[in-house]
Amino acid sequence: MSKYDTMTDRELDAVVAEKVFGWRLSHRPGYGHIRKDSTVPPCKYPHYASDIEPAWHLVYSWRGDFELRRQNGMWKATFFIPSREFEAWADTGPRAVCLARLLATDALSPTPETPAP
Image (cartoon, rainbow, N blue to C red; front, side, top):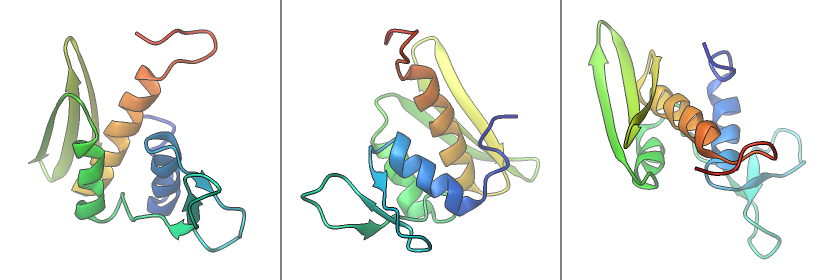
């Protein structure tokens, strides 16, 4: 179980916008707006975790292989790079895509203690 599994879809949407695409959340409560920088006007962030169309942007921006399949009543999304894979299971395809991509992003993002691979 990952730290993302208990988040609501909209909470996941916000985390995806920030971690994967580099957007900042605005501080206007209830608006769900994001902005890339101060030159771009705020816009509502997509429903990555509940709508397959925006979820595919997580796949398009990935530089490796990807698989999404339904198995035993659940959806499994897997992002692949050579010698590694990041998978997640969820009730819906878009949510599985979000969860798997966040796992991949976390694992491959450098932290102050860990340099990039």
